[in-house]
Length: 314
Image (cartoon, rainbow, N blue to C red; front, side):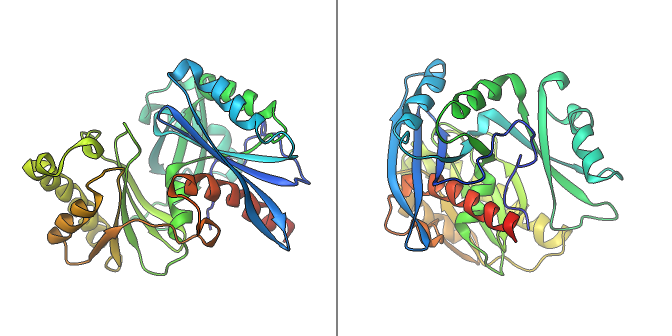
């Protein structure tokens, strides 16, 4: 089962005996981070930090300032990149070994992304659902020159980088291992929303919805004038593809994760479009319970490091 992205990259500095796990999420003009430490045979949230910054040129110094607050811990870091720092695309799986696929990704994916091939850094996961005669893979692609300075800053801290991941993978972790599929509409501030279908902790389907970046800022009256109709159409198209083209069982529910003051009203009105239950998204990850929602992504990212370490020791 896939839990992480980019865990095979050779330049990641892994501390094999950490005393802490740090999860750091880069968002629009804000960084949230948490530090997990072991206590009484379990990991608990020891410290939470929010660090704001004014513009993109301040991002690296903001990350350094944020991580400096965890300096008393020796650990590992997991960083969740914002959507403008990566592209997630689907392609046919080459008939090659895993190593050969990894080595050739920057060239096989170059026509599907808007990044110079020489700057592409990529990793992939196998799609859990077979589509037609060919297996598919989802490829995570970023710009090496864009993320290398970020990696350097993290590696200069006392919790060097062990994992780069993205919203889609963290959302799958937060939903938990449910046997029925859930569709999630998820948006970060000032970003286009994502539409995901998740089952048993795996992302089965993912697409970025274009033209909805103002969704979180709109009033209920504005939303009622066409925006919810357009959004429901995009959701229905994805449901039709999932259930009809991929021949998958019906969805369990639709979960809405939008940073809007009208979320409850959006959920209520949006529920009129679909026969399945529509509700606000909430984390099912036990370690997140009792902590503010703004830190859930960071907690889940840090928890991914614990899961990865456990798998490696099995």
